[in-house]
Image 1 (cartoon, rainbow, N blue to C red):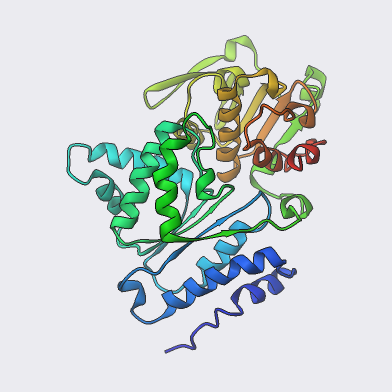
Image 2: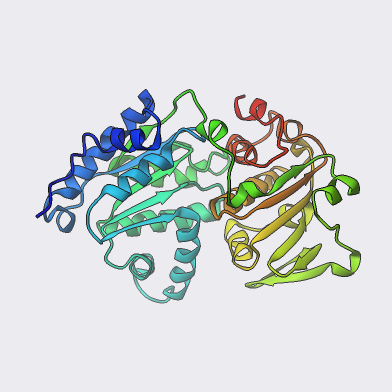
Length: 354
């Protein structure tokens, strides 16, 4: 038998190895995760009554995912899963539909996707569409029915999920269930580490932000403006969308075509299965766009960033101007932080820190 892990020092040691020191907010959040790690480390505990999970929430770039990653890497046993919530949500929707004529369709879908896992870690736990909120209720109910311990990160507390006041009542039972079953911990330190970290060497940040989006600047960035003959309809599932160009695994969309039509996060995920490098042109000043289009744009940025897909974003104004305005949804702060990863995205800090 190996030496039992000292959960009291796991997070401090990991931070030291990464070259930093936990701030006070991170240290506070590490406590419940260390408590859970210690309970899961007890022989046989993971096979008995499930211990209380942890929900870590707070602004972008404060280290939530790092804390949960560190916890997950240290927790023992094979019956654990870490999965991005977008990915799980899409597959759950599909599996639940496959079992729709059977009793307990939600639990069957969870069994299909998670097998015998007793601990599940979700990153970026959020929902903005009332239809998605209904599915989320099934997810949470099925997880708890199967006695799975849940760890999640989010930019919102449970009570802040589905923040649109017209639909917030839909999520209230789910928020209550999460609050009853999990320790709710806020990570809200003063620093956005995403802004002060090293420049990205892969993924989303390999794209760029281009303004003004005139042909000369676009060409100088190595992009070839689509000809009308390149426009085509792209089918995904039962839906279609117009692409300005498709060149192998590269795709070019216009903001209006992709964000001003009723596409869901699941639709965007399906498109990322096909295309690994994206260009989106025509980003307007978002206060001139409809609220639903703005939310879809935020969802799209989430999907591309989370799946590490480079994005070239061609805009009508500097980013700080595009993403400013009192009428924009709360998610615009996370969107601004993520778009700050793109070279050329000057003026973002004023948006994210408002």
